[in-house]
Amino acid sequence: MAAAVAAGLATSLVLVAGQAEADPPKGVGLKATLAAAPDTVKTPFETSNGAAWTTQPQAVRFLRDLDAASDRVRVQTVGRSLQNRPIQLVAVGSPAPAAQAAAATGSVALFTCSVHGDENSGREACMQMARDLAFTTDPALNRFLEQTTVLFVNPNPDGWVADTRGNADGVDVNRDYMDLATPEARAIVKIIRDWQPEVLNDLHEYGPSEFYRTDLLHLWPRNRNVDPIMHDLAQQMSEKYSSAQVTSLGYTSGIYGHWVKDGEPFRQVAGDGQARILRNYAGLVNVAGMLSETANRPLDDAEEADPSLLNRRRVEVNYASAVGSVQMVIENRGPLARETAAAAARNTELGRTGDGVIYFAGQDDMIPTSGSQVEPKPMCGYQLSAATFTEVRSTLALHGVTSRNNADGRYVTLAQPTRGLIPLLFDNRSEFKIADGTPVAC
Image 1 (tube, rainbow, N blue to C red):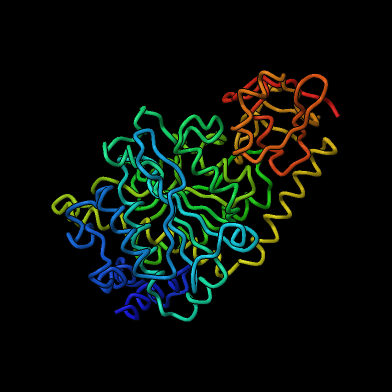
Image 2: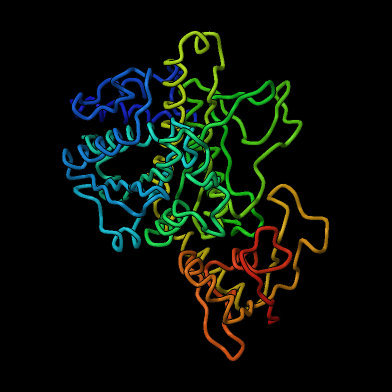
């Protein structure tokens, strides 16, 4: 049975970037994978054939059973929600997951699974992929797991239980990756800081409309402070791997935030460069991050008539996007490791010399037009008062931002890997700053 699981996953892995000789039936590789899963480790969603979503308590039991069934899987609690539910991190590797310190010096892929509690498909896709990787006997995937630790995190258990977008306080966690006011965002940022993933895929859902209705919408970091090579790697993963994987299975794909008519985008309604959104934050801390969104309402008459068909498509599309990210790592593990390290070094040097440009607005396809949104002669750091530093000390530690004492309080240099993020945390020109800091010239 495990061999059949591996065969299905391997089938989906090779259907990337037009490599298949002919278009397969819609979702065939994924459906074979899911149908072949051992009955003892199927999710409730699979058991119901898409008629019922897995509940949060059921997921806790499923992950516990998966951990017990496979040495490749380790489940740990990395935080607690506002209502004291566990925020669980699933690590998969072969013959067993690497310890955090060892994994951080090697290769890590991270999937965040439905940070919005009412978007079910990302969680289901993550549980299924964790299971499929745990049982694969495919030689290529075994080699992949020997060299790469794959992480899955279910970040909003309270929203999951309540079926709400936000957490128990109604906060949208995907707007909290700068301030880190929520325990959910703190848990995710701590994972990024400690495990040092090279790639990240953030799985979501969206509501389709007349000009906004593909199976997958995807996007890379648009923030202009992201290292250019990290930006390009993230865009490559988004377009050439995840989107290509989805379309190779017969699904449709488009750019998140772009309304399209007659095949041409005509209006951007979402998808900007806010650093407080995970795909942008990931880029600012030198991770090739992307967003995946699958349509959460029917796209055709068949889905309108059969909600379980709709639900299965939602899961299959997010699963396929995640498979694309896996393929990105398989084909580019060395370059990803080199370039993430190089990006950290480039940012540190730019911060030391005061070279480059700092942006407080705009995005990769939109240069700011106001002088107040751009700093062409960057500062070398920010001065914080002692009281301000006390207020933000733990937040800076989670971001991996370092500082030092001086006579005026605390100095935060830009000569560190997070150079592009620091001005957005402290500068008066930053829309979502977390505290007041005084720019210090070079």
